[in-house]
Image (cartoon, rainbow, N blue to C red; front, side, top):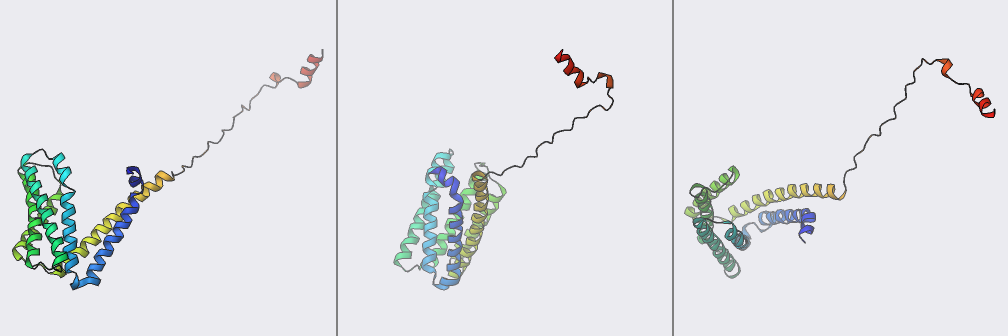
Amino acid sequence: MKKFFKTYGWIFKFIAAGLILALGIVFKFILKDDAKMFVLLLTGVVLLLFGLFRVIPLIKTLNNKILRVLNIIEVAVNIIVGAVMLFFAFTEGGDLGNIYGYLLGGVFYLRGLVYFVSVVLVKEQTNPLHFWFHLAILTLGVAIFFNGDISTETIVWLIFAISIIVAGYLSFDGGGHYKRYRYETNPVKVKTKTKKQEDVIVDPVIDPSTIEDPQQQEDQIIQ
């Protein structure tokens, strides 16, 4: 099964790119202001997945006790907030009011806080991309939390922008895997040039006396 996904994973990436882009288009141009319940539903699902699928890898790879405790707290918060959002999406028509902004801002702030604690205090390795991303997440989390209310239109625009970025990345990555797949299944035939036979250069200066007469050779054989 692993070999199948490794070989044909590009197909699923193209499908995922199409679905994500279609989701962004639906949110932006079809649902518009009626997207409250769907926004809450989508946010809840993402937070649940982000929490659940990080539990085992974090437990296996984190050796520092402080980081382990902080990450477990973050995972638990993500799961709880995701479950709350799903509950309200199905029971209250997707209307959390200002609570949605407080919850989302808190999740963003906690993610940035855990990252900077791990980098600054525990000296965990990082890179510039992760640094600027988490700085933006931390800043956005503070802004959303203290503002409280975040409009549905803002969330829809955010979902639309993220869908374009993610779909573009998946398409580019899928294209690279498809190219590799083509090279593996249809190896390129390398054309090799056949070496031409070199002409034998005969010395033009030949002593005629060294050449035997064929008739003499025949007479010798008969005798």
